[in-house]
Amino acid sequence: MTEQKVPGSELYTDEFAADPYPAYARLREEAPVCPVSSRRFDSYLITRFEDAKAALTDSRLSKDLYGPDKHYIRIFGPNSEGLNRNMLNSDPPEHTRLRKIVSQAFAPRRIEALRPRVAEIVDNLLDKIVPHGQAELMHDFAIPLPMMVICELLGIPETDHDRVLGWTQVIRTSGSSGRPPEEERAAVQEAQLQLTHYLTDLVRVKREHPADDMISALIESSEHGGNLSESELVPTTFLLLFAGHQTTADFLGNATVALLTNPDQLELLHADPELLPSAIEELLRFDGPLPVASPRIAMEDLEYQGVCIPRGSIVGVVINAANHDPEQFAEPDRLDFRRERGPHIGFGHGVHYCLGVSLARMEARIGIGALLRRLPDLRLAVPAAELRRLPAASPFRGLLELPVVFRA
Ligand code: HEM
Image (cartoon, rainbow, N blue to C red):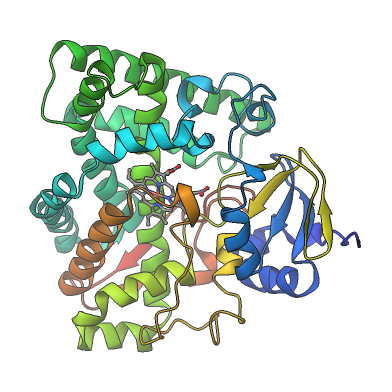
């Protein structure tokens, strides 16, 4: 077996944050299974498409972070149970049980019924933007759209949206405030604590006053043989809240930049709006918001591409590198809405495949469709290279700000 050299120096730099794809290409070529150290933890990165798919369904790679070995401590820190002990961090059969309960509450009927409301939220946000001729699209559009949708779906009262958004944004933008790391960590822990208290209180209120929303549905299923314990309600709600807006917000931002920096594809979409569903999938393949799948743990010594991944190692499946693998996608670094639709893994693969995929697609199609229709001459207000991004070590790929201009 061969030990690969660590090309770590090129990962987690500002240059990497601006454009990680050249570094991913080198990893795929030279070190497709590569040990790396980030500010957060040491891990093995898997970057080729076929390996990524295999790893995401490899039962020797566990997501059971809260089992007896307490792997969560290395990943989320010691006090993370209250928010993160949820389906994403568990294995079957635990995962199967948790996912089944949420899937019921997440029934396609409930999601489809949201369509007019999603369109209304999009229109209201754009109504506020259109007269000004300029906007900061992350804060004016990409973040509030999925945030409002998931809050309404869960049943988080509108008067609390700003507070909740404040906490989730501290978690999302961690590492970008310019403050010393200890201060930053303390701020994230404080936000997590506040959010835990808030969601715990909300679950209590919903138990006493059930409404037609998802938290009430989860409570009901926990009380009527649905087998969701009290202590699982808050982390499950947190997962839906966080996964439900963070990824979609970053996707809307990344997708807009990709469109504005690929005028031929933008023109194509203007000329043929029917292409929108394929365009959304291609935009997700091209620059997805979750560059690395959530951490897996090697339950035994594993071998991928001749590299030994020792038992206990953290493994990161690099979704965005796999989605640019030339073995799977011809000219992978080219945005091409007419591309033969090869299956990307932007929504994951295997048992943890994104539970919110229908909602995410609906929001993206309605949101991007309306943005292009109502702001047809949309342009970046600064050169793409100057856009402020989440730091390279962030688990998310997204923008801190997206300044744009257009004809009012
Ligand atoms: C463009 C937007 C989105 C993207 C790119 C995305 C991507 C993903 C990916 C890659 C995973 C698998 C993670 C892994 O295996 O480590 C995942 C899981 C998940 N996503 Fe999404 N997601 C998006 C939107 C949403 C929305 C709107 C929701 C709604 C609540 C949601 C809820 C979830 C949940 C609950 C899981 C965990 C599923 C499980 O563990 O079985 N996601 N998502």
